[in-house]
Image (cartoon, rainbow, N blue to C red; front, side, top):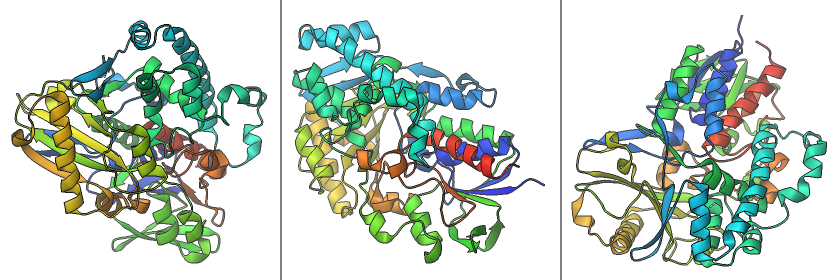
Length: 491
C-alpha cells in the first residue's frame, strides 16, 4: 500500500515535491489555504484585466524545462515561451533610459558607449559569472545541505576562489566597471536577495549570467500558466489538490507525525511536507516540544524584503514602457539602507513596473494596459491604507514625470498588496515577500533545515530552506526534498 504524504501549501515548491513524490509511487494530497493553487504566483481577474499576483520574471528557463522533461513533457506543451527583447528598460531620469538588449553583441556595444572599452571586461565578468552559475545551479543548489561533507567535492574545493564567496558583489563589480549606470545595472538583481550589494557575496553574480546570457522570458498567457502546467503534471501523477483548506495543527506522537488537522477533518499521513511558510509551521502548527527552532532563533534571521504592490488597469495605451521597467531615478544606496540596515518606509524608493500587455494581449482589454508596480520595502513595517496611498501617489507622480505621460486619471482598476496581505494570505513571517536573505551566514547548512530533527517524518520545502528564494530555486527545493523522502520512505 502506498505511503500517504500530505503537502502543506501549493506554491512552486509544494507542487514540485508533490509531483515528484507521486511519480515515485507515494499517495500525495496537497492542502492549500487559499482558493487556488500557486502561492505567491496566484492570479486574479477583474474588469477584463488578468493579473499575476507575484513573480513576473522568467529567468533560468532550463530549470523549468528540466522539471517538465523529468515527466516526459516540455514547456511548449503548456505555453508559448518567448524571449523578451529588450530584456527590460532602466530609467535614470525624465525620458532618460537604457533598453537592455537580449543579444550579447548589442549589450557589449551598449557597455562600450557608456564606458569605452568596457565590453572586454563584460566578457570576462560574464565568463566568471557563467562558471558560478554552472557550479551553483548544477551542483550546489541540488544538495540537501545536511552536512559540510556534501561540499567536500574536489571540483567545488578547487573552485572556491573562483566563486568569490568572500568578496562582496559591490566590490567585485567595481573591479571591472566604473560608470555608475553600469554598476547599478549589475547590482540590481541582488536587491531582492536580502542584503545590500556591499554585504552580498560576489557568488551571486551568477544572477547576472542568468539575466544577460540566458535571457528574460515570458510565458504567453501569464506566469500563472506555469502553476497550471505543474499542477496538471502533478495531477497526472495522481496528486490530489484540496483548496480553501487551512491546516490548523500537525499531530505528532513521540518522534512521528501522524497527520494534520485542517478545518473539521484529520488527514492521516506517513510523511508531512511543509511547503507553506517555515516559521508558521514551526512556531504555530507544531507542539512546543517538537519545534525545530526557538522564537529567538527566528527573530535573529535576516529576512529578504517585503513589497508594496499595486495592480492597475489603465484605460489607454502607454508610451515609454517596455514589458519590464526599472526606475533608478533616486539614490540606490539610500533605498538599500532603508530596506536592510535601518528598516523603515523609504523616503524616495526605487521601484519596478511590469506592463505585460506590451507583450500579451490576453492580459488586458483591447486599447488598455495592465500594470504591476512593485516597491521593495523592509519586512515587519506598519502597513495601513494611509501609508499605501501615500506611496501610490508618489510612485504614480514619478512615473508620469519619468515617462512624460499622464496616467492617474486613466486608471480604472486599482488594488494594493503589502505586509498585511502577505501575512493573511501566506502566513509570511514578518510579511516578507522573498523569504530568507541570501547572506553568507544564511547559506547552505546555515539555512533552516529541510528536515525536522525531532520528528522522523516532517520535511520542509520552499524559500525559507535550501536552496533559497525565487521561482527556480523553489522548484529545485521540491525536487531535493522529494529525493530525501524517497531515500527514507521508499513507496
